[in-house]
Image 1 (tube, rainbow, N blue to C red):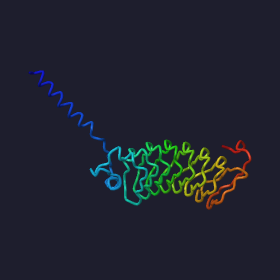
Image 2: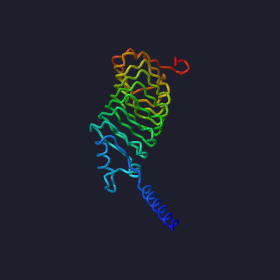
Image 3: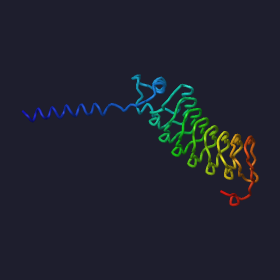
Image 4: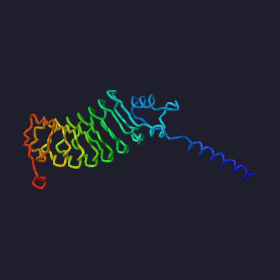
Length: 230
């Protein structure tokens, strides 16, 4: 008799456990505005939650000038290709899990750090008007457009961004720019960099637009990169 009771108890426990594991994991949001946006756009089954599978179906998010303070939960949107979250109140943004991301616009926030080293498919990066002191784009070899103006950058290495066409890095504290490998570059704006003294580029490199206002920059046109001091 005891064995029968024990059997039913174990069976009940297993049923409860199966029911729990059968429930799909949902995305946790810290910010109610971002949560409401996601539910309004991506809640397919109408349960007022965003499941991990629903998050994985999302290709694009555009939440601009919405007073969002946190994008916590974005790490579950792993198939996203476009993220626009500019003109909000963000102090942090984790996009390290968004490995398929091609376009990121997080300008006009309060970010002090931005890690895009895992975003190797990234083509457009707009992170202007933040508080960044460092920006590593060495892994973003597909990058064609970079707006990092109005930050606190003292260095910017774009030597591995050989596909770069458009670069805006004005209103920073850069001391030099090495553009020797950026042979496809057409637009460069680097004005209002009071410490900028040297811009290195190839002798035959032709830019369609070049703005260097309020800098002390000397443009050095070189035939061989080995002669440049970097």
